[in-house]
Image (tube, rainbow, N blue to C red):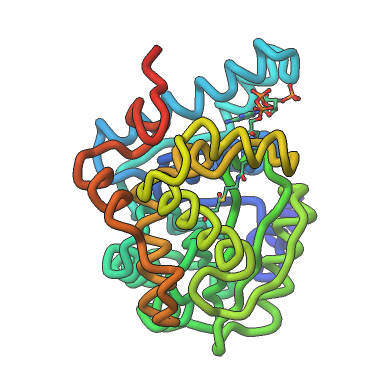
Length: 298
Ligand code: 3HC
């Protein structure tokens, strides 16, 4: 048993202890998927109110699983027992993998990677970001071990979407990339595609210009929101229309992703249109605030 424990603690051990930084839409989904897969998951938020909101979001999602017959109450309780919630990054010292999922703000993310670098003790720990668009290289350079930093990008809603994009930077070690892929497919049961470290990666590079085109179409008075959405659902069999999808992702996130992509490529189609900017100014961020292009308060 001592040998097994030593092997478990050693650098060749499986990646069983996950830390998730940020318990918003994406972080709570990542933590949920990992805890449901049997991992020991520590979740960190910036303060107690944010932590308690994140815990509530995660618990409601598990309750939804119970109501839908996908989980028993005992399963839900076992999943909750594998989760710990903290405001202290120091609690991440023993983590094998850390996935950062805070807002799309480069400085904030870089500060977190710098702090993590000082805290995490495992020599071959994986430092991952769920960023949609910020270059992984910039986050790697905030640490003393950029060869262990990689993008692991999930899709919303995380418990539903199978895909994860794996994004190595120029300095990511092949062993980190392979370990990240093994973690995502073997441990979390998701499927991966690989992308070069370019703002937007594969999926957002294709999706965001389409979403912004829908916002411009609405803004110009070309068609109303319901017709734009119904057009793509009924005409192209998309699960939801582009404006409803903007509301699901969060208009603040779409704006941040579009800005990163625009900054990288200077492509006008990536530039966020004024209507999107004004809605973000107004706090109309979509489903999470009750109103975006559609109303969710009823
Ligand atoms: N958590 C867990 N399960 C959920 C869920 C959630 N938040 N939302 C929906 N589900 C499950 C439901 O339980 C249901 O499961 P079942 O079929 O086994 O009963 C299934 O998903 C379908 O849900 P609903 O019947 O409630 O609703 P819909 O059929 O309308 O599906 C949807 C909702 C899954 C959101 C679907 O409309 C969809 O896939 N939309 C597209 C979403 C998309 O494109 N996401 C990618 C966004 S881009 C991104 O995230 C990248 C970022 O960087 C910007």
